[in-house]
Amino acid sequence: STMPPLLSAIANAGRHGVLAKSAVVMERLGQVDAVALDKTGTLTEGTPRVTEIRTLPGSGLDEDGLLALAAAAEQPSEHPLARAVVDAARERCLSLPEALDFSSAPGQGVSVTVAGRTVQVGSPARLSAATGPASAAVAELEETGQTAVLVLRDDGPVGVIGIADRLRRDAAATVTALTGLTGRSPVLLTGDNERAARHLAAQVGITDVRAGLLPQDKAAAVQKWEAEGRKVLVVGDGVNDAPALAAAHTGIAMGKAGSDLALETADAVVVRDELATVPAVVALSRTARRLVV
Ligand code: ADP
Ligand code: MG
Image (cartoon, rainbow, N blue to C red):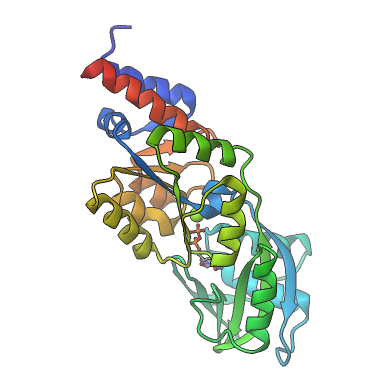
């Protein structure tokens, strides 16, 4: 064709299922020599499901009551864990109590007011009250590879919900391909707990796992790597990935379940829901670069 090489590279990337926002993106993508991957929604399918519901002594709630309370809090959230909770409540045909004053802290969880009481749902590591029976339940769920979500009412733990997600079918092949392209294994950056993260990373051959990270921690990890001279590709899907996507040499967002903020912040978007398109476009952008230089 008569198109300039970088433009035809964009068109080619589009055919592979990745939408680059500009020709410059294709050029920068061709320069990356290190990769940081998010876990939930990126390495995994991002459609986690509720696998266990545990009420805590003194909560006065049964399983359905706990699930309904958590779902009421999670309803406005676009986080994959929130969707899992809401879907589970819907499957049981539960009616949800009215929740007011919704707020969310990316990488941590959500908070609402239900019947005049504060209800928080989120990371056990970030909600300080995970002690006693709550922390025992959390540890048991995490040791089996589940993500434990803690439910607090007026700062007291009332239950723990276990949620599990599946690895994408092409996750291991993608990690292998990216390792081949950059000469180093990708790093896993996640806000989730260390136990669940390592459990998953081991299955795709990732050994460098940074867990329990807040959004700004993910960005700081990328910045540190860039300061050491790396040109880092970040792949993520969540609101919590936006600062890292912005800090990266190039950021790619998973389009299908990606949050609006991640899609806006990223330089390119995976429009076909396949992680393996990421190494494919990296390879493609290198070919395009060679044609230009
Ligand atoms: P990842 O980096 O793997 O995509 P996140 O940073 O999005 O994970 O989330 C990190 C942790 O924060 C989750 O494992 C969970 O414990 C907690 N969390 C974040 N948002 C929510 C939410 N809406 N509901 C429950 N827990 C949440
Ligand atoms: Mg994610």
